[in-house]
Length: 553
Image 1 (spheres, helix red, strand yellow):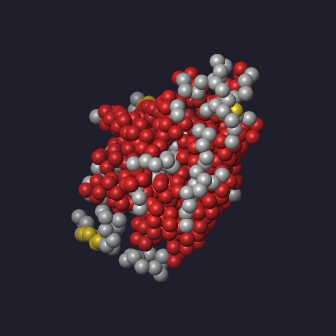
Image 2: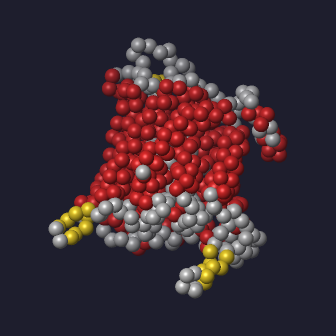
Image 3: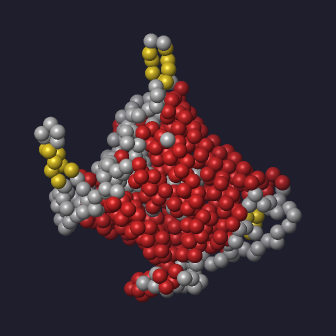
């Protein structure tokens, strides 16, 4: 039954992806469309903000991106630091610690939602709605806008205008889905109230404070925007955030909705639908391979000793909700790391070594669909690397979408590619060699995995964690905050530069020697490139962590 539910969910993802991708292509089309009448109120926001639909070059677009995000981070940081004095705080939650406020504001504005705090006891309703919920729309809207601009550049068109794209991302994509599915979530039993906590009498007669709040509206954008931060500390393992199997399935569909639709949007915008399908199928192949392997090892469980010697138990239920079971917990863990969402319905620290390694690998590669916008940009980056390597093997100047990929583009791509492992491995080395190692709760190989997972989650803007790590300290708050910021904006800016460079080049006529990037052969080369270039970068780290842990059980 579990396998059938997983197959049905994946089938729904595949069915929805193409129409959603076509909708995105229309939503961001600067020409007249039927959506202009439906969303005519956008003109009011353009007028209030002094926004003119004037095309920007890539430098102007990137500057707008960085400035807007920096200003939002500063405003929300101030809200966190003063929430104790502000209204909508019925539980009298105090002001947030300075380093924790820094980490949290950067975390949610970078689409990471790494939480070094417990949601229900650390943030007021005002901070949840004006701070967290606001950034949950602004962050994915930012990444989606940059992704669309990137695709425009690849197709030879002008980059566009950041403010227009951000407005359209929020009003034409994120808000409509959030309103509709939010009502569904409330109907399924999620709280939606501004009242304070309630006191309940338990079975043994003791008193228990039960927190609640505007959970239903929070959950939609948490999953749709690949945000992942929970209203409650235990995230989607909490029954108020994830009441039953249906809500669990809807959350998985939301997490995958935008990442799986972007290849189809890309195909439509560049005028080559087949190439979009190749990218989609290539990423789907990697995901299914990871999912099948993870399910196999998680159902094997951890080795245990009995009178007959070593054997495996019947599936690991440690850290998992009984209402979801092993299968749906593993499925959710792979979806949330593949989509760079970071929401959890099980504690990833309790996954078997191989299950934890595959969840970690999704973030290390950061291309198995990836998060809203930023993940797809990484997919195209690897596609360009595959084209470049193929060109070197046959002695031809590599071409992508009719544009020659030359030294300038490859230097930018190389720097972008190297930044990801540099942030993860460099920060992990510093943490393991300094006081950061004090936060490790498990000595040995699993302790290494805890540290690497934390920085990988930060650099990949995922936000999930091996929660055994004691990470609410100044060292971890500041270091992961820096990693999250650089992991987010460095790659977006450099790949915008690549798109801007390609947009200015002339089309190269296609010949019999042109390498086709819309064939199954290219899909195989792309998957191979991702594993050779991406996976081998981190293989020694995986050997020291989860693989060594597995071999020593």
